[in-house]
Length: 288
Image 1 (cartoon, rainbow, N blue to C red):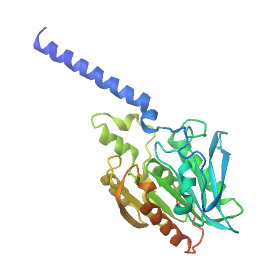
Image 2 (image 1 turned 135 degrees about the horizontal axis):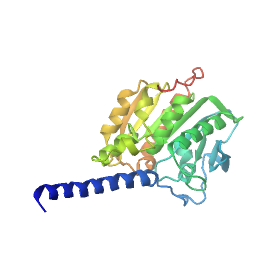
Image 3 (image 1 turned 90 degrees about the vertical axis):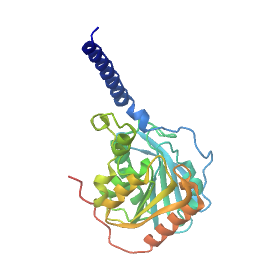
Image 4 (image 1 turned 45 degrees about the vertical axis):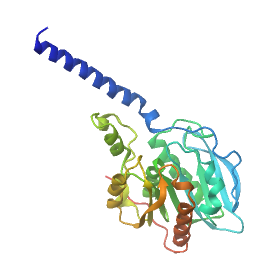
């Protein structure tokens, strides 16, 4: 075999391998992006500062969603929070820690489709649709003040929280280790792959950042090899209502929400924001 044929053969093999890798990423992207945890992190979740009960709700297509509703003791209406978890997160721990994280607030923490006791298959479109439904459901509770409902999102859930806050009148927003987009993170990880052509679940928060009208609190991990600070920088640069952008000392991507310092910061921010009376915000217009 002459040299030109060898080069052509090698190029053909390389092209085949490259195409195979692209096909593999396209076929397995849901598994790469979502990592549903089925087992409860806390077997019997109970908030010391709330009445806690398990709730089951139905998504618009009838899919069963399961989680917990925590209601403060005493008469309402109370301010409220909808919490959106991370890639591998089962949210029963929120019920356990709600007394510290969300004192005096009604809290709704529901597992995504396919997580915990929720049914279905996770995906960006459904997660955002379900998130808006949860926000509306919580606003409709008789003991909730619909003008004081915040959204809190961690890691992957920050992308859900941003899109829900874009489409609903959130009073405040908390983003824990947020990113500019899952697409950008994937392009960083798979540098030679045409990720933009195959990735369906993009969570492009950076597209919607300028549309958020609520005061937004950004919390970063001191050490984060999942969401590098440069990706958070891109998001924050597009926001117009950043209340504070802060690094939690001695934190990493996994432990940040459990740290007492993080929980105290979130509780203080939300308590302060809920004390501010302002008109019910209209939903921001959709991005073009």
